[in-house]
Image (cartoon, rainbow, N blue to C red; front, side, top):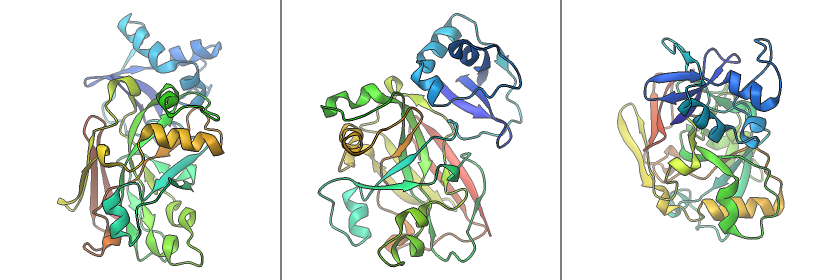
Length: 293
């Protein structure tokens, strides 16, 4: 069972997907929020829904036949979560990717941020920013926080705070990221559309995040192919470490790092208008983006 948001940008409808059938979540979200299901109300797959136990409630409501079916034909697939309060990213979290970046594997997680408004749908076009010459792709496992997370005392408690998992493309402008004085990771990661997300959110108890295969292609040619078992810092360590320094809010997105096989390696050209990028994580779905100028 998967969760998604369908419709035009800024007007997506939250749904539960069961096979090819979609079931509207608005009535349940209104119920959990204790408000009438007013069509004008903004009801979404957001932090409040997740913190209220919305994923489990949705599965129970669906099993009881309480969710109305929605015709999904022709509807665009949006990002599977509404805009989070923050997007945290872990850099150089696969040893081979650190090596192709010219760096040693880090001794502790390298953390940077990405602008939340960079999030778009999984199949939305990617526009190369004005002045960019080094736009790069990065397939990543993203985790979505389900409950407020502050100063965890034990990494083993981390999964209690993870609502589910998503596919992400952590697009990067390498010259902005690495070529500017001091290194400007956030600037190189936050251009409009630089975080295609989805197609689905899969609940944490329905996905093996510790050994999932993740891959990417450009114009049909393989680029990245690895498994999350090769992460230097795994899910538990990442969430625990972040909680020691900041508060993770429900709905926040954490990108866990990318494996080797990006353009930064020098083995492949950077993206150009007309290219097609595809990314996939087994069990979490596939993305496809056309690159435009």
